[in-house]
Image (tube, rainbow, N blue to C red; front, top):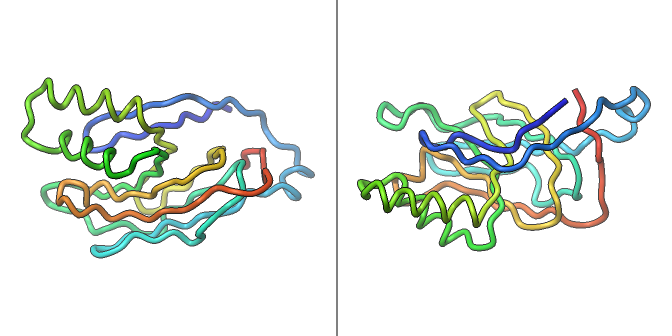
Length: 167
């Protein structure tokens, strides 16, 4: 199975690397289940069900997103890793602004070289991805153009947990 880390965000596609994995044996699946991180968005907040998880495979469940916006469309919650979230949000704001094409291209280049998108989706979406140690952000894409993005931070720390993707 091939799982691609990446996400379409506001009409822009942020792609990273692909992760090739094999199918898990039934015995491994039973003993090595990944932790489940529920993502829940509303008009005023975005929450994660856990403050931290172990490195390795994590399953994300988008439990709820903001209501669809007539101008911005359906909400999508994405999971990213970046060393500087403030600069990341500033550059993403340029993408959603009335900036020139060259300014948007420059901002996209910066975003692609300073972050990794680990997937995302609308309400009901479930995905699994392998996460290394670090600080991660769950972000509601419909809140970005408002200048007051809804986001939640979580950590990946400790000894490696599940290393197998499951169906």
